[in-house]
Image 1 (cartoon, rainbow, N blue to C red):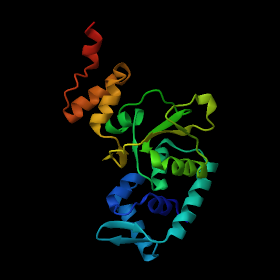
Image 2 (image 1 turned 180 degrees about the vertical axis):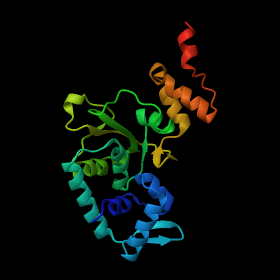
Image 3 (image 1 turned 90 degrees about the vertical axis):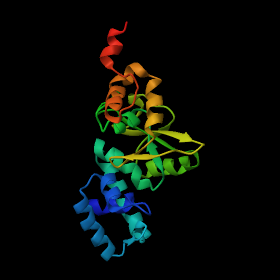
Image 4 (image 1 turned 135 degrees about the vertical axis):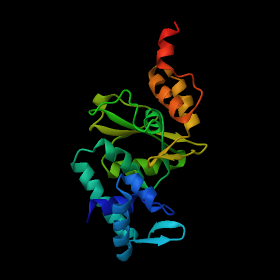
Length: 221
């Protein structure tokens, strides 16, 4: 079983385009297209008028078990930390620090290191049990609503899950589902000193009037 094929099958949701799947797993369109052709010939997936659909769920489960075993054995890279949640097949959106990270295209990081790298995701409250089961299958620690102390976590990569009872709104940026830009900015404004550089990037890139000049903020006193 090939790792790329596994990532394609596990990350594909009904209706996804080839381009969306390629973005999700961080692989080129041409390489993803080639693998999808092979998987279609093997009758693992099907291409329909509405997009990609996994049709062999037994193979999907085998891929899930294979990838869970790999990630349980080997250290998870920062890149894979953003791919793994797609394997759950459950809707989610990057939030908090990761909303800033995604909307700035990786241009802003704060309060994370290689030894302590939490990924912050927003999920439907009704799906919390499924998320817990998923992370347990992959032997990855996850907490609800609060980031734990690094000393309390076994492993570098872990997830902080924020359940929402009123549903979640999702936009897509570079293959990552993320809360809407307006919501991300609102979160950052709650702790503006920490997020000032990110707000400056966002104001410039998306032409938003945030008054987010880090230099002006420093000289305004």
